[in-house]
Structures are given as C-alpha cells and as structure tokens.
Amino acid sequence: MKLVFIYGPPASGKLTVAKELAKLTGFKLFHNHVSIQFVESLFEFGTKPFSRLTEKYRAEMLEEAAKEAIDTTFTFVYGKTTDDPFVRRVLRKVSAQGGEVCFVRLHCSMNELERRVSSKARKSLGKITNKKLLGDLFKRFDLDAEVPFRPSLTIDTGTESPRKAAWTIAQHYGIRVRERR
Image (cartoon, rainbow, N blue to C red; front, side, top):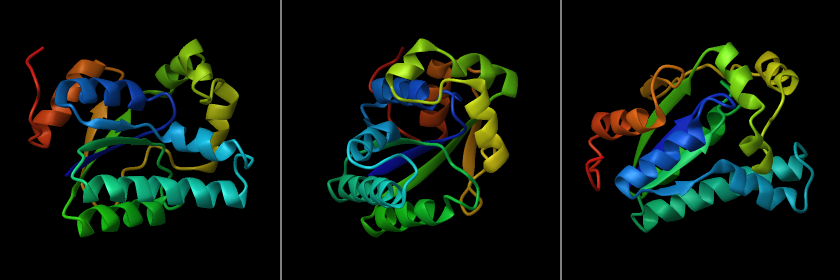
C-alpha cells in the first residue's frame, strides 16, 4: 500500500492535484475536509473534542487503508511542529501495516494563494475563502514548512498544472499509471 500524503497551505491545490492523481493511478482519495465536516456535525471547529476526533478518524482511516492494501491519496494542511505528532502517528500506523508514505509538498506564491482562496468552489467544500483568514493562518502557523523527518517531493503549483503535478508524483514515487493521457 502506498499513501501519497499531499500537504501545503490552503489554496495550494491539494485537492485538485489529488483528484488528478486518483484519475491517473486509481488511488482512492481521502480529502481531509470529509473528516472535518463529519466531526463538525456535532462539535465546533477548533474545540478539543473536534481536534481529537478529526485526528483519530483520519489516523484510523489511513491505518485501515494500509491493512486492506488500498492505495490512497490524502490531503492535509500541515503546520510545522503543531502537526508533527499526527504526521508521525500516520507514518507509524501505515508503516506497521507494511505501507509506504510518500510525502508531497505543494506550494505557490502568496499572491497566487490569495487569488485562489476566494473561488466559489472552496466555499461549497467548507474551506477558507478569504484573504484575511488565510493571512491569519500564516501568522499563527508555519504553513510553508516541509515535513522535517521524511523527504518530500516539492511542487510549485503556481507554475505546474495539476495534471503535470500528478504525473510528476507518479513518476517520482514509481506509481503505476492506469493510462497515458
């Protein structure tokens, strides 16, 4: 089982690239906002129960995917230091099942992030949709950081199309593609 762990700041293109990778490879897609919306149905965003449960369900889903040998792509906004325990937990759980975690860091310029953040599609998915919230997040967390304990493939989504990014990921990690596009 391979887990392609795509991370980067809000509006960096994680879901768009993950969808392209899923089409290209047949990998299942676990969009992190699914867990947010699920837990948010009972617990307010940012509360202790909300944080504990989203982390728990994400880790358990990825562990089960590894147990069942389901190749998966997962999207995540990574904040250096704050999210390190969760990332290490996922690594342990997937590795314990014989799986491999392939880290992909997406980034682009702040101007591009600000341009993208207000798109209508983001609102329907419950994502951050304004520049102020984006700026506030960057002030609170180091969202441009690379996961420090494993190498990551880094892709600039300001210059590389989602389709090209998916091909780059597949080639870099030796992932078999379903078809030529």
